[in-house]
Length: 84
Image (tube, rainbow, N blue to C red; front, side):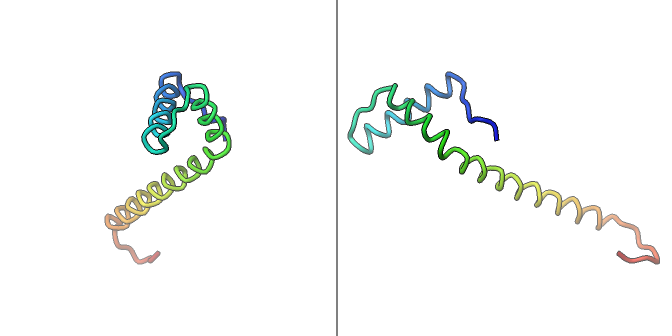
């Protein structure tokens, strides 16, 4: 897996969300540097869990679509003397 990276805009937005969360939910102020440090920690240590779950979710969707395609192909199959 490649390192999880964000654009500057994405990182700034995430840092703001972390700061808002700390302020609103924990009633604590957290500076941008600390919020960015926390983001880097989560990206490096926990991000893979979210990444892997996203892959599993995508695989489930793809498998469902492949089943649909297989069913559609079966429906248009012409009868012959041979059976599957």
